[in-house]
Structures are given as structure tokens and as C-alpha cells.
Length: 337
Image (tube, rainbow, N blue to C red; front, side, top):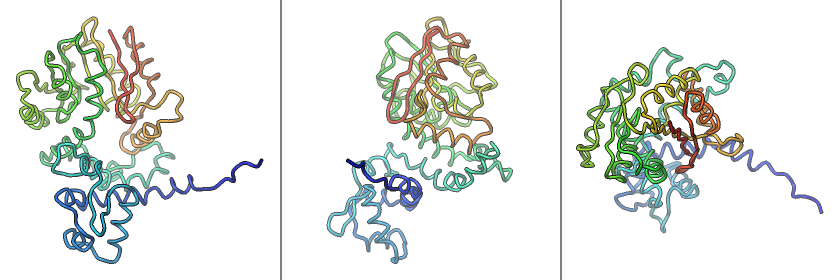
């Protein structure tokens, strides 16, 4: 019996994937999902409220329906449960801030991926002499929006860390590169006996402390000002590095791991969580694509497998290591001193 004929559907779906991506990113930019969080609206009302030209508006809305990002009830459009939760700017679960950055910056930069693969050089603002993160950290309003987006993006991972790590054995922790404090807060909320710190640059302090106050955790959570390249890490039982190591080259990764090992007491632990590439490097496409994003964004950063990280941890002195899956494409590597 002859096998099924080969068809190019999978190839074409990936090749034209930017169509779907840009449709979603434009919808986020327009605030479509936030508008529909208030009530269902028909196409005519959406055109008026979003100030769209009528020519392709119906195709735009119906494409979002076909992509399972909107529902259509008769002539009225509504959010799906997922877009209602994650793409309404009024909700603390909003992840659209990161998508807004993808739309404004990364979408265009990824057009130069081939150049990056040939040169090994970043393809972002560096090419024009600009510094995105320097500019971001100099603008308190933009920085706060970015840090809030990081919180929305990390909540599922944070809750998995809170559930899967043996926190009962420990009393204190610090999240290195803590941003708004999303990971630290979820851990502290789940474990009342813990005292925590968030370490980041001084400009992050007011955003972190405001978020901590909103969760009524100021008695157990404090901000630790510092640059993790220049300063010592906090002396606590558990250190956390989430989406930190992948920004740097191998020499810098090893330096940060050595600093973590030096700061921890005997019996302490380091948690590294990232979109870890699977050890066989075949299935976690998101982790591999994230590593390509590090090519676009950084001079030497790259993502890595759990086996890579375990090897590095053992090299700096951690006696026992293990990998645990978390939410979505993320996993954590734990090193015990």
C-alpha cells in the first residue's frame, strides 16, 4: 500500500507564519482585546472605536476568529477566555506589554536574522549606535510598563517554582534581576515562613516596592540594590536567576554561577529558570528560537539545555543538580551546595 503523498502544508504554514503573528501584534497595538473586555461589539462599532478603514476590517476581525483569538456571536465579536485574561491591559495578568515590544522592535529586527547568522553580530538598535535597554532604564514610565509585562509573562512559571521547589527546608531567598518582583511575590505568597529579596538596579526600586506593598508583603520582602556583575550577591539560603544567564556569553555565565556559589551557605541552592532547550535539541522550538533571539539582541548570549547548565553548575562546585519542568516551555535547573 502506497504511503500518503507528501504535501507542503507544514512548510507553508511556517513560512507564512509572520501573517498570523503580525495580525495578533497589530490587534494588541490597537487595544482591540482591551476594548472587547468591556462588551461585545459588532464590526461597524469596532471600526469606529479603533479608527480603522473599512476596506479590510472585516477580514482582520474574522482572521482573528479563525486564529482562535476572538469569538464571533452573530455579528458581534468577543474575546476568547485566553485573550480576555492575558490581553486586557486592565488586568494584572496582561502579557501584551511583551507583545507590544515584539511589535515595536523585534518584528523588524528579525528581518535581519540572515545577516546575524552570517556575522554573529546583534541586529537591534546597536546597529545604529543606540542602546535600547539604556534608553528603557532612563525612562521611568516605559521601564515600569516593561517590568509589569515581565510579571504577567512570568506568573505561571513563578507559581510552578513555588510548588515544585522544597521551600520548607529554607528560610530566605533572593531573586537576582527581579524586575517588578513577580517571581518573588508568588513564592512569598505561597510560603508564609519565607523572607525574600529582589536584587536589581537602583532605578527598579520604586516599581518593586510599589508592587510589594500592593501585595502586603513589605514585612517579608525587601529590595537589594546592586549590579550583579559588579556587586556581591545577597547572602540567603536560595538564589534565583530567571531569564538572566541566557543574556550572556559562556565566560559571563560561568562568572555569575561562581558568584552564586560563593554567596550561598552550605546546603543552599541556586534555581536557574529559562526556556531550556531539550537535551536532544529536537522538541523545544521556543527555547531554540529564544536562543536565536539572543543573537538578535545581545553580543554573546545564547540559550542552553538542562544538561549544559548542570555541567556548568558542577564545574563551579555544586554537588547535586537536577532539572524540573515548569509552566509552558520553561524549566528550572537546581544546584545544591
